[in-house]
Amino acid sequence: MFLLEELRPLAGPEAPAAASGVRLVEDLGGIAGQPPGSVLVLTGAASRQAAGYRLDVALRDAAAAGAVALVLTAEAGQALEALEAAVDRSAAALAERGGVALLAAAGGDLAELVVAIDRAIAGDAAEALVRTARAAEAVAGAGGVPERIAEAAGAALGRPVRADGGAFTAQAGGPAGTHFDRAAGIVLRLAALAAAAGPSDELPGRSRAQLLTELLVAPENQAQELAPRARALGLPIDDWHVVLRLEPAKTADAAGDGPADGGQERYALLETAASRAVRAARELGGAAWNAALAGDALIVVRSQRRDQGRAGLREAVRDAARLLERVRPAGAELRCGVSTAHQGLVGLRTSASEARTALRRSTLPLATYDLAGLDRMLEEWYASDAAQHAVRELLQPILDLGGERAAHLLAILRAYLDHNGSPARAAEELHLHRNAVSRNVRRIETLLQADLADPRQRLALQLACRAASSR
Image (cartoon, rainbow, N blue to C red; front, top):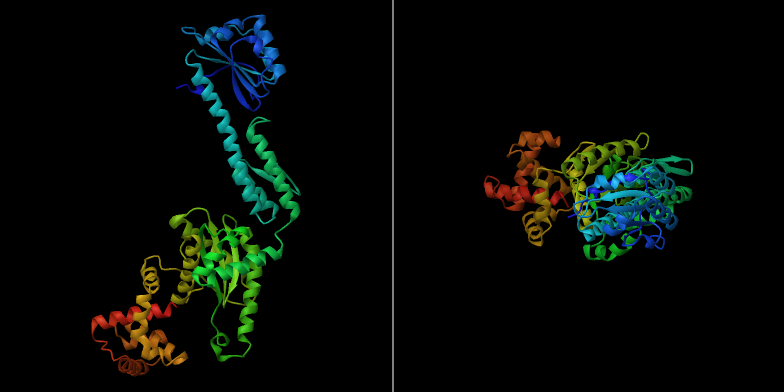
């Protein structure tokens, strides 16, 4: 197989123009009629003719035709040094002035040589096209912020891009006129147009936020029907998602012991956080960010094309801490739950559930989902119809009490079981008197007709309590 590394440069420019194709030439007289941008490969017989003044004529014809290279091929048994020796000072000057690279190739299968050159030309163009498409998508997702646009375009092109007002320039990464040079020019023009349009206006952002809310709260079959619309609006629902759930820290008012308009204050707080979240997320970069209000929480979705594994989750937690600090209104306390990464629309909904569970399981300002797996198992277990039926059957006498009374008894039962049946430790966690815990445990045993001394019943009720509190 022929390798392009075997081509030996003899004369001409150090950085030739981009080639558009390759042609095999059997007679020097056919050089003048070749299409511009061609690499002209001379057969052994034609190469033998290209000596002395005839080589000069061939180079002039190649330059006039707009060829980018002329390849001399050695015949069987002929050394490349012989071809190199045939290039005199006049031919070297003509090659340099005409912009035609004069190359030499060892004798062999000319078909292999032509195919190898053709693949190299096509591959260069294909890679430039891929980079252009990638850069265009990145520029479109940069939110109209010049610095973000420059960073996104540079990452896709593989060369630094600098934003200077409304203009963008790329660091030279190859000869002028190459496929990559043309690709960079296209991307820089797109970057200028994106910057001129300014930051994404609020209406599309609101539309995406409203649709994101629907995707999270609608029944799964309805959410699937919304997927095409989500893609059309630019929501990356097919990527890998980590969800950050932000809620106001619980206060007396939030618990219902304060003024009647406490719910309105919480919603106003979340609206303020939401408006800041979009701007702050753009500055964080490295992922696609979308935010929406869902019930009593601000949902921020961090999406990436690939699963970044544990390192990605650690980065997501760091981003969550930075985001939490930036979106917190003055004098207000917010808590944030962080999920693990899941892919696609179903994964988005799973991540949202995990972020909610993370907050319910912790009192910390920044809580992460249980990576050890217990919460994950419980979530998957409770998602089944059989498990939900079992939980209702076990806890129904308590659930029938409704409201705060049911929640109070379930909290006592869970704390008691989590602390291996210790009223003292459960009382310490719940800030109750030990006697109050013991009295309520006896009441629970009566209601459920359960024997909490039985290990199997204890385990069943403990799992049921955990599953019920994750709803």
